[in-house]
Image 1 (cartoon, each protein chain N blue to C red):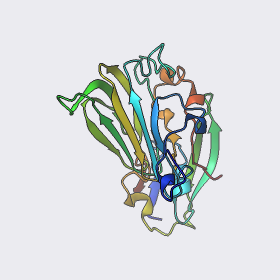
Image 2: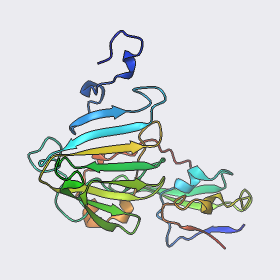
Image 3: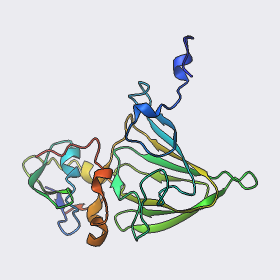
Image 4: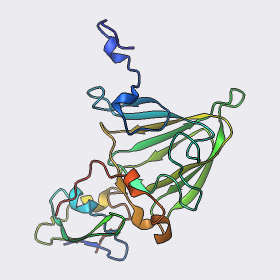
Length: 70
Length: 177
């Protein structure tokens, strides 16, 4: 698997789980904060990821650019 | 405006009854539900009382990061600010604060301009700080309906606590899992 989520940069918005064309990004956990914001912990599933690179091909695919090669 | 002529249906006047939650002085609102095939367009006046206490809409506050909180849209967005000074059309007649990106980079607009917002790009808070002459705001979403997802997690905790979040609901996003 060529891509990873930088957990220090991740805003836990969950958007990547909706956008991956291979459905290779899974939500492991969700937490609702006191003002109603839901935070998601996501993970790239190595078995499903095809290294297609869609997740890094568009500048704002991840709004905080937390998905990177390597 | 729509009449019984063949093409009268294409002349559309904004009807506030169609959008009961709207409090801004809207002139035009177009979207897929109003006319099949239309993208989302919203046009409204901004007057000196806009967002201030005693104005027609709820006050936006005057603390740091007040205003429409940070968010993204699925589609690209154009935020067009048009001044009404006949002697200088590029004079906005107002100061508008806008923050861009996850870093909350601050900008103040005083000139007629368009802000381009790419899909998924975090933008706002947006807030008119001062308006000396009414101006027109045009919001274009390059998609059939308005979508919005909050990124309030980038705001300081003390700011989040000041905001009535029921005013800024997410629209059009369904996160699996």
